[in-house]
Length: 522
Ligand code: NG6
Ligand code: CA
Image (cartoon, rainbow, N blue to C red):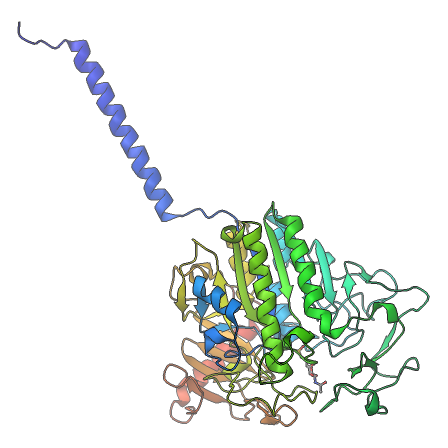
C-alpha cells in the first residue's frame, strides 16, 4: 500500500511548523532584546570616600613606600580609573557636588564649611540618597560630613540637630560633623550628639572664646601634636583645633579610635540592611589632619602618621570587603573607592609628614595637590568593583563624582526629573567598563575653575598666590590663564596658550557658557 497522507495530516503538520517558526522568532527576539539591553539587578552600593588621599598614595596607583593590600585587591578585582575626579580640590564643594549632582560653584556658601555651619544642601533639593530611596534602597552615611548641620545660624548641639542628612535623603547617619581638626569634637548620630551629658552642655564658637578650656596658642606644653599653621584654639585630647569649644566632655571622641568607631558603625549598617538593597556613603576621616592613627598602625610605615593613616585607610577598606564576603553579598555589591580631593603634606600640624616623606610621591605623575587647579587637585584614586558585572582592568575614561547621582539612578532604574542633578552625567557605561569614554568635558574647581575637553585643559585666569606658602602647594593661579595638553603632558609642564591662543579663547568661551547655563547635563 502506498503511503498516503491525508489532508488533515498535512494541515496539522503545517500548523506545527508554523507555531515552531513563530516560537523560534519569539525566542530569537527575546534573546536579542536581552543582549541589547542587559537588565542589571539592583546592587548594593558602597562609596568609600577617603579624605585628602592623593592619586598615588596607594599601591595600585604606584606607591611603593606604603602597602595597601586591600585597596590593591579591590583594584585587581575591579576597574581602576586613571582620569577619575573629585568635583573640587577641597572637601565641602566636592561632597556638595557629589550628593546634589550640581557643581558647587553654582551655589554660594559651598566653600570649606566652618564647624558650626548650617546645612548647605537645601532639603528641597533632589539628592543622590533621595534618588536611591525612590528606588527602594536603604540609605546611610557614616563618617565625615562637612556639609553643615541645622538651620540658618547653625545647629543646637544640645538639642535636636536638624536639618541634616536625614532631611536630604539618608535613613541613617553617624557623623563627624565637620573635620577632625575643627570643633565640636563629638559624633552626631541621626539627630543627636552621642553620649552627651545634659548637665555639661556644648558651646561652640569660631569667633570668640567660650569656656575656660586651655587653647593651644597659650598652652603648647599641653599638646601631644603641635600646629604648624592655624589649629591653635581649644585643646581636645592634647590636640589644638580650629575654633573654640566648651562642655560635652563625656561626648568627646578619641582621635585614635575614630577609624574603629566609624568602621564599626558602617559594618553594623551593612549587617542591618544585608537583605535589601542598601546605599552606604562611608566617609573616612583618614588621611585628613590631625593624623592620629590607632596605636596598632603606628610605625607601620617609615613616613610617620601620614603614611600610617594610609595603612589605617586600607584596613577600613579590608573590613568592608570582609563583611561582604562573610554575608555572602560581595557579588551583589558595587564598591567605589575614591577620595574627596588631592594630597597635601603639611596641612596644619607638625606631624613629620614633610620630614619623613622620603621617596613617596603622593601626586604621582600629576602637578599640584589639594587646593590646586592643577590635575592633582581633583584627579584621585577611583576604583569600582562589582564582581561578575564589572570586568577587571583599567579605564582612562573621564569621570567625575558629580556624575554618581545620574549614573546610580540609571543603575537603580529611577527616573530623574529634568531640573534635578543639573551637572550629573550618566556615565554608567564607562563605570561598568562597557565604554572607553565617560564625559566629553568637565569643570574642575579650585580657587579658579578649569575646563577639561578631552585631553585639553584650560585653567581660567585667577588672581592670588601661585603657591600656598603654608602647604607648599602650587595652586595654578595665573592672571592670564593656563593651557595644557594632557595627552602628551600629564604633568602640566608645557604651557600652550601662546602657541594655541585660539584654543585658549575657545576653552574660556565654553567655560563661560557652562557657567551661564544653569545646567550641563545632557
Ligand atoms: C583649611 C585648614 C586645613 C583643612 C582645610 C579643610 C587651616 C590653616 N587650614 O582651612 O587644615 O582643615 O581647611 O580641608 O586652618 S578639607 O579637606 O576638609 O577641605
Ligand atoms: Ca578633603
